[in-house]
Image 1 (cartoon, rainbow, N blue to C red):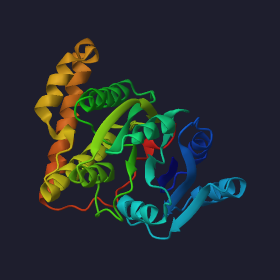
Image 2 (cartoon, one colour):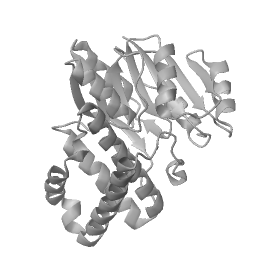
Image 3 (cartoon, helix red, strand yellow):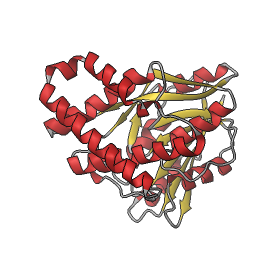
Image 4 (cartoon, rainbow, N blue to C red):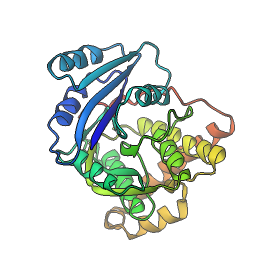
Length: 288
């Protein structure tokens, strides 16, 4: 099974080497990583230089430079155009997959009606106790929610059934909405683990949640597709069942308040049609 991996990058010099090393060292059986395409959009740091050095040593790695940063969806469309495989993987440039993650994702595509497979994100711990609690709680909620209704982000594998995607803030859910329309299966695979870095400041957390919620509302309005995390009642029911919630009620209340504030701002952005396609990077999420 040939697989093309796409990494969309903007000023990722702090993590791109670790990510490419991890992808090259993946343990695979049925999956053949045919190519790793890095689309670097408007990078002004050493990202391009680092990727170029990797490509000289391994022909699987290819660098495509998008001179102007036009948003992640634009970079994904470049990847969709260049990718040679029928099974594609989108890996966020600020994440690190576990050594068997690519194989686990791809093994699901022996089922001919499989459309999208999402991995499980596990955030690494940071020194800020409050923000670390909030980020860990957020991804635990996503995990529990995805067991019955997948929430896609950070890492997905999917069939190449589209030539491009619309301009969007929430690219993984956008792809899922296209594939769902084709009556293919959408699943969550918790054994396909990818490590990510959550924000370390309240400001970065709110900025991130604001943008994503705005994107989900825009997608719902445009395609009548609901990301599972839009169901606030279901999320709250799951939250009440989590041990971590009951152990630290104060931090949990702060987490709910900040998430709610981010959603209010995202709702306002959606109403006033604020363009988040080229978003401000949350710097604290970029270094493990």
